[in-house]
Length: 66
Image 1 (tube, helix red, strand yellow):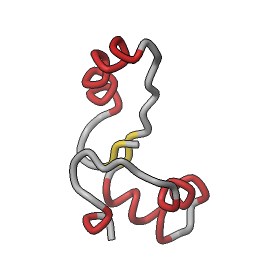
Image 2 (image 1 turned 135 degrees about the horizontal axis):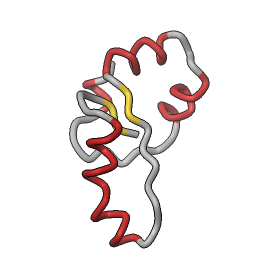
Image 3 (image 1 turned 90 degrees about the vertical axis):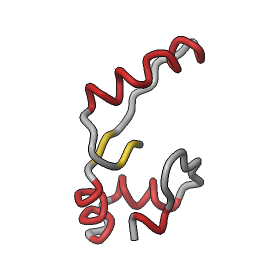
Image 4 (image 1 turned 135 degrees about the vertical axis):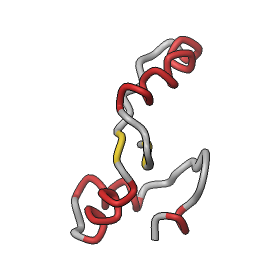
């Protein structure tokens, strides 16, 4: 999951070389920060599952998402 200011197209483009390296397709979910916070507050099932699951933070951290 990618949370922030980017488009799905940009995310897929940025992940292209990594897909080649891994030898498998990566299907990212891209969500704006405000949308993620709103859905988390509304207890959206998908966002709630993501929030509870272990994460590998590449840039930023949980404190930025409240």
